[in-house]
Image (cartoon, rainbow, N blue to C red; front, side):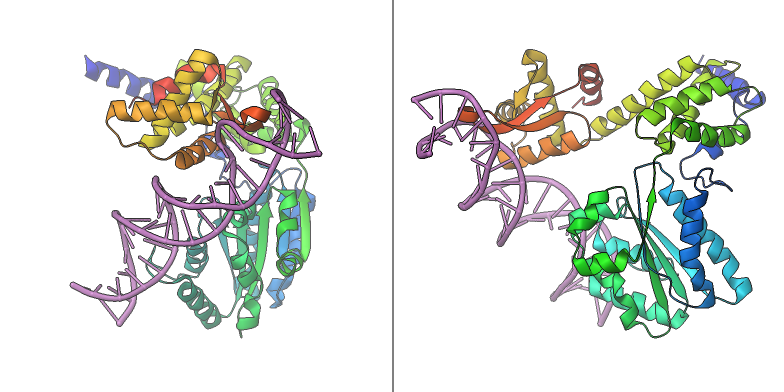
Length: 393
DNA sequence: CTTCCACCGGAAGTACCGGTAA
DNA sequence: TTACCGGTACTTCCGGTGGAAG
């Protein structure tokens, strides 16, 4: 009986308290802990730069560099939040806006998001960008404090939209009479600054902080600190944590990855009803994370990208690789079979590039001399079946 | 050294959607 | 309601190109 299944799950998960987790939230990537191990220097630097805000001065703009999962976001939020909390007792007005410009990915939405942190309500579309900008400036001056604007992953943004917005923001203080704006830009691409307008560059990079990747030992400390609060005593050994740390350290010391690994390993252990998390659980977590990402990406693909992916899978199964032209021909046939109007090759070429960027396929531009220039397209063997299952049309 | 393949990928434009302001 | 606005998906056109073959 189905109700028995539900009953069983409820009784095994809810009635007994988890043997593994005490508070899983703590392993969540957005959770900002009370202390950030091995980032003391970076916190101090940033705080020293921004602290003049509490005296009513405008602090320097800051550029923060560092690879993913090196604590850039956490440190920036942490310092901004602490200062904002401290401000009222010192009779200073300080607010901060945090925008991840990879998620909030158009100029309009970025400004709207910044403005909304001042309590401004901006429609999601419909008015001109310059109008939103104007309202933001007006709201700033009415309020008259210091606004710290944290722009996360700005390299993504600038690559897509250019540096117009940065240019405007950097010079916004010239238009303000009472309020001030300080910008914290966060990027994981060190080269990105070189392509910026020199004026933006010098202004945004008044101060620069570089976040080095964590090594395995530091990752171990980070995981340990969180694990103590997140797990039941004895549920996870230091050996397991050290294994997670090692795995993540190999991928350029990414703390987010390390935390995900530990959390999912814990979930697997719990599902199994195990007493504690083992290294085997971590290994499986590693596979599960990757496969889950791929599956979600593939199964939510729109129609034509799905058809293109299907064409690629067929070709790869037959002969190992494919080219843009071959994929297009196969896609063309498939489209007609399913009764859809095929798109142009130009568009398909773009879709192939997108599939590559999502990590579903590998597409490299190669020149084969007399035989032309094209994309060489492959799929990792382990992913073929997974992808095939994900794209039932 | 030149040729020339099989594309790449930028630019500009069209159509449409979901939304706002007046 | 009409007139915009921004974003996305797509097309058309086309100059550009790495390197094997000649």
